[in-house]
Image 1 (cartoon, rainbow, N blue to C red):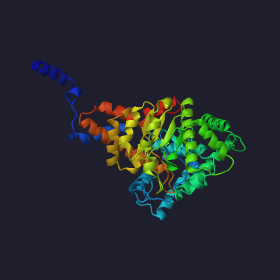
Image 2 (cartoon, helix red, strand yellow):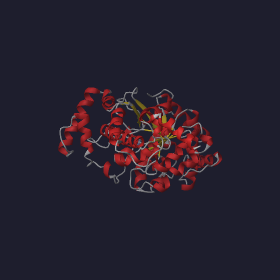
Image 3 (tube, rainbow, N blue to C red):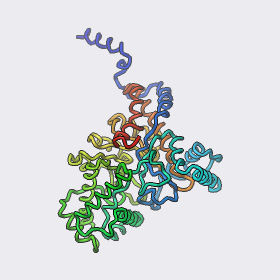
Length: 442
Ligand SMILES: [Zn+2]
């Protein structure tokens, strides 16, 4: 027996990759070298950005909601010196700070390029960062974004807010900002579909909802997005249709539903929408992280509240992309991707976290379900100086360095080979996301 084992090891050690097949808990001294090698390769991988809001800061369609005043985490503040590096890399910014006087140079430079380049402006930003294609998660698509590079993801929340929202709005100052914009969005869908007002019966309302989804898909929409976590709890009940129908009939024309009645109606509508996502092959993107504004409830809107929906076999034909990976609960969240139709997107995480910490989050994901995770930047035009351009840059640079570091440790600790690490990098940065859209994105 002992001889047998010895022979077995001799055979194994004749095959170099298997010789170190026992994983170790600490990286070796080769980790820096592996990191540099991987980073050089990873920089060459063309990226698909699975979640971003490209647009100019004066464009109101860049989101279906607006940011209320609130606290920003350290790295997301205007004072972050990395933003100066971003402006230098993208625009040749000649200064070392973003003082109002210097920032004017940047605003002028962008205006000049915008005039000169037109629809090429944002495509050029993608080119500089080796991004092949990007989601444009926007209220409406912009005519200055090239549809060959930017794929529209539209918002579906507004269908859940058809009644008098005065009671919902008064919950806190953030809702006073958010809910009027949801009402506006619903009004735009009503105009788009050429109906004069909301239909009096529930069946017609549901067909208006479905028609809007279908028309948005025809207009190039590749997925629907929910920001519902900002507006209410993500604990969804499972009421029968009759209950939702009664509430609709009672309040569609006038009256203020009680919070319980509104919730019941929305629980039904949300489930209707995600079922439609399955029927239409329209993946469902859900904001699943902590949010902006000081009143965002992590307890009521944490990702694990959605477990009953995501693990429900009735929705097996709906593809779910959990935007922002449930952060700061990303370690638990990755286990939800055990369900075949559930994916995690890391946008925002690599901006909210510095690369040292993002490396840890991503490594745990790569070690669990590496084939179920996708890259996104959450690029957004924060203001005239700090635009979607700079946030694309910050997201891409941070993700590449965090990803290379996570994989370098995994290689050094004997978990995967370098070739396998690069395969995982390509899946995360590009292939897993593009694979969800049946050839509609590249
Ligand atoms: Zn976003």
